[in-house]
Amino acid sequence: MLKPTLLLALTLLTGLAHAADDKPLIVGTTAAFAIPLETAVEEAKKQGLTVKLVEFTDWIAPNVSLAAGDIDVNYFQHKPFLENANTQAGTDLVPYAPGIINNVGLYSKRYKSVDELPKGASVAIANDPISSGRGLQLLAKAGLITLKPGVGYKATEDDILTNPKGIKILQVEAVQLVRAYDDADLVQGYPAYIRLAKTFDAGSALLFDGLDHPEYVIQFVIKPERKDDPRLAKFVDIYQHSPVVRASLDKINGKLYQVGWKE
Image 1 (cartoon, one colour):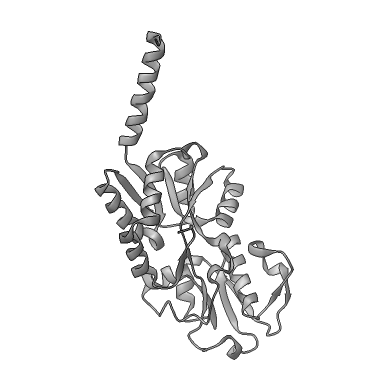
Image 2 (tube, one colour; image 1 turned 30 degrees about the vertical axis):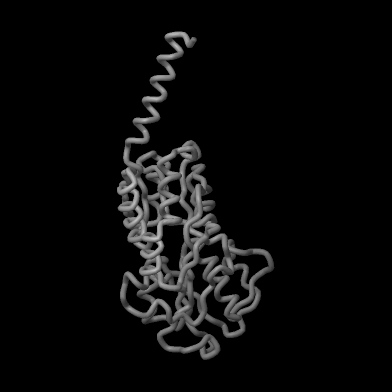
């Protein structure tokens, strides 16, 4: 038989666990991923799980809020971005489960193929350390530059070995790349933001990267102590396996994404 003090302690712990289960799961995201997550929130509600979605307007605040405990999980970043964010902020946020990978492409208002680009063409890529690396990888795939072997997503302009057309690389804030479409000869573009801007066809890229780089799968990210939260496990399962959520992903992304989990 359990001692009264031990029984009381177990009762209190059980009560706290149930209380945690009853609290809304707070999920942080950005506009590019919000609509399918809203669908998942509605599906969770039908299954008795309350989820609150918080939409951020930049790529810094979701991790700051997660580290501070203001939200339980965020969903907007891939592993290279998270690795860099942890290094910069001294945090220890970790991936919990994979989401989708959005294709990133090279777009041009003036030219119909990469081969048509003239010498000295202007090329706009993202300016943050990780997204610019992805942009440089795309330029290498397009044959416009070559990079030092093995640099991967950490590539910088210093890693460019050859640039036969002498392209001029312009670094722009990632969410502003859509606006550079009118000015630059070639632009690194994110289909989700292109669709939100409604300025040109997100499917019109001259080249996509797709699953060439699985490290860019968007992750559900948490503080390590959240890994056994049953609310989190249930919500991620809904996001990954609900037909209604998949329909929402298809509607928003068309064919310009793949799932990052095993089906």
